[in-house]
Image (tube, rainbow, N blue to C red; front, side, top):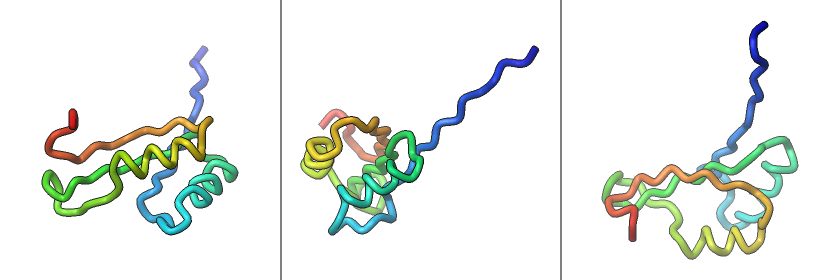
Length: 79
């Protein structure tokens, strides 16, 4: 008998309204996202630049119970 699979949805926040980031993220979660996918770009490893640690920390302080998955496209991920 085949095992059943559980599907989890990770909603990317790459194209949300950053002026209303916390509310945009909460809408994704309220509409079925299991967790949030954060594309972190530093402008060096890849030409684009997104948000950094201060923004993620504020988001975490606002949305405490969500799981954040991060895709780090940065030159020095330990920094």
